[in-house]
Length: 432
Image 1 (cartoon, one colour):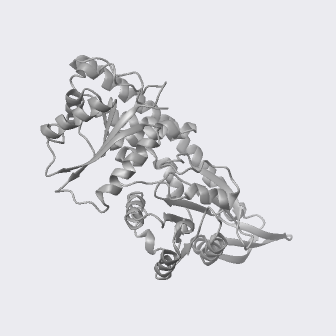
Image 2 (tube, one colour; image 1 turned 120 degrees about the horizontal axis):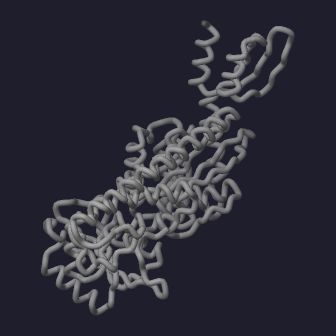
Image 3 (cartoon, helix red, strand yellow; image 1 turned 60 degrees about the horizontal axis):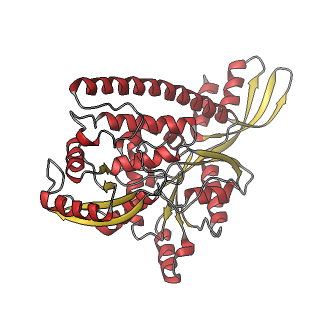
């Protein structure tokens, strides 16, 4: 479901620039940020023929970068026959329009690029709705007074008309109507997911959510542990739609493993909100497993980006919680010395495990750690319930795992397994 119309017969030639603004210090190196932006462009099969880090002292309100730099970039674009310029920053509508007018080519920013990738990759109905909502929210802010020569170059959902205030108002109304319709459809999806979660709780199977920076190896690990066939490629955002599968732990306990969309630095706000329904699996999960690409030089910075997104979802201080596991993935790519250093680093925190989704090394240890965490959170209890107490019996079936039951004339003896919170609630109910 791409939103930008590219040449379908051949790969579109693109340029990628990263403006390194002196007043906006980075946690990662400018080179790493540029390489990530190039990786995003390659993820939608663009032909990147030019890339550059632009050192600028301050952001220009009109075009983000200065006139002299624009002229130099235009010469490069004309010479290389570049059709699309990607600016790895957040452009205002005016800055985007000004750059397009001066360069005479299509210009998109980081948010638009990520939205384009999501538009191509979403497969499920829910995923497509979420992407469309995010894109419409973003596109609404791009409606400006005049498109001038770029009218024909703008692709998308086909609702953007020509210049003029009346046309803009019409476009905005059409977008608003679409946003309202999609939100209603997503609400239905959200209700369906809630019903599905309730059904799982009645079984119940604990949910274990895999999270991490994009391309950290979550889907490869998911496939390794569950014998599934989820797309796992060396691409940014290879997985967008959530995947879930039941797996058995060494103790025999069964859990639902959930693979989620990868996070990224400066994740567009529109996408965080639009994918809220998908990420609710993370919020409600019994265990959160943070998969890190420990072979990446920016692994520490990527970790902070993931924790920041989790915090925005309401998971405060998740790193210090007992139900948080940190996996140092891709150890097969480390040298012996780097692997030893990673082991020392892992030993300084709890619930840290070195793994390789590719070779399987460390995966069995991870499953045992996961088993231990879930065992600590659960209690096995014996309770006797009067046969006529249908309400209590229904509550037990909904909130615990029934291990065994023995019905006598007036009572039913249950052996159940439940988490500590539910056990506390049960105790209060029995005492009343």
